[in-house]
Length: 210
Ligand code: SAM
Image 1 (tube, protein in one colour):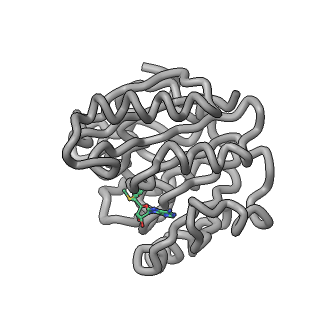
Image 2 (cartoon, protein in one colour):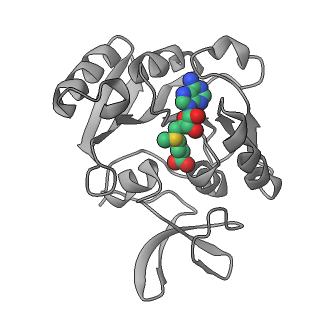
Image 3 (cartoon, protein in one colour):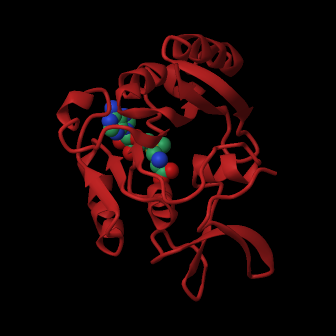
């Protein structure tokens, strides 16, 4: 098991050992004082940490999060990271995301399309430490490549790939091979791991820009 970032701890909730961060609850998760359980079944990044992937996260880093939805995962990230820019293009989940940001001064929701990074390039600082991506739409490798411009040279991409979003008819393993090949245009892949214990037909990828 690799180290957890500062600000993420293993704690016991109702007799069960869980990852947890400190912050206001967002999705009905169990709490214990100021700590809130991080549900890996609701969060690909939570699953990557739970499975011991070496994310390189230490706590306090600047984050660009693509596919924030209603804020389940990005709220945990903003609990332990530094400035956290959360991109989501659907208005409905973005309303909940705004609510999650109310008590998180370092969380900056952006109602933007992750395929059009030029539309938020003026807001997101350059050289972010981490890009976290969970967009679950076709062209997931392309989105990661288009957003590599924001990453510091020694930064990390933490990517969750959903096979069914690329093509429901094909073998997930074939899709994952293609995504890895396409990513190689702009990233060196450091680690990959199937997340099936928590998310069926998903692959977790840790990479750094070339
Ligand atoms: N990451 C979220 C979490 O763990 O809390 C769940 C994300 S959900 C699987 C995928 C989200 O990506 C959806 O809310 C969808 O609207 C968003 N999305 C898909 N394509 C996008 C794009 N091009 N730009 C911004 N958001 C996008």
